[in-house]
Length: 233
Image (tube, rainbow, N blue to C red; front, side, top):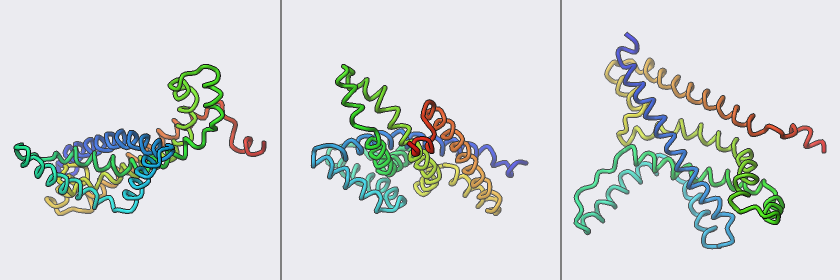
């Protein structure tokens, strides 16, 4: 029998892992856009707040933040709930995992997007506005595509790291791929088999992701001169 009958369980865990990673990426991109805009803002308060956010996240281990948000956040919410007369609130591990992963990688993506924004010449934006483009049209047609092309390598790297880092959600009881692999390994006493299967699954996820990002990079580079040609000029 395939993986001693634990194959379907690992598949469910794999789908849950992909769900956590995808939802976390969506949240991280939103936070990254806000953080990058704040870092480039003329507001000193906004810039310093964003800098404090990125500095905090890059200085604290992911596992510590996961435990802090899951356990500490639940205690804080229930302490507030007691004062307001609410009942006990149990934070869902999936929600806690997504919030934590999104919060962590939002800081890294903020730096990626900030660099991508700075890579787009400001003169193009000013020229488009002078020709009567709205700010939304400037973002959608001129700044956005170029910014995405510059940001894509950093985004792909953060996605790959995030995808592998989802393994830490197993410590808060979420039945992801790693958690299910550990349970199967414990029940059958065959850790090499099941942890090897988990490793191969993550390897397949990252390999497919790299192919997808390579395709996206190729599509976004249509009409662009090769780098060697640009450097020669």
